Length: 202
Image (cartoon, rainbow, N blue to C red):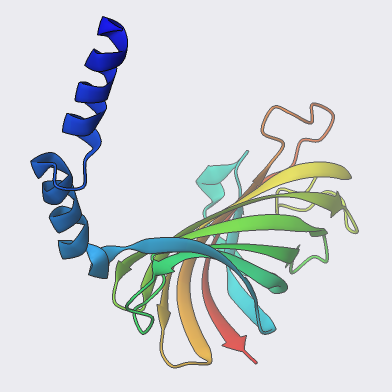
């Protein structure tokens, strides 16, 4: 009986609607209502990105960068993002996209695969992104200096700083890297790319 009475007193004191602690928490939640966020999954309009730049073979970096290399991204039609619940006009705080990747050098050696991009808002309409993926590499022309040496799977990494110039156009500066990542031991591809990109949202 003593235990039951103690439990009732405790719950009445701590969980009552007029509990000062509850009132304080409610006031804090109300004051931060404008900052409340939510993760949402959206159907994304088609988007195509083209990145052109210079490349080097990571195994012989003393030879420097030479032109040219192209990378193409086709965004898949869904996007997972973090945004404000009550301020819908603001930029997304975090965007997660999946995309098709096509990557080739001037020699015709190429890679194709899938990647996931994480984009973080740093300024208004400006995002810092990291993209990782797995690509299949094809060596069309052997004994070149573009870092493609073997056919097989490789890792595809990309860092990007992008600015939305308008509702449909985005410009970016990119660093791209292809390597076996010590996961695919029989593939010795190793390439760096510095490139500028332009994306169009249809």
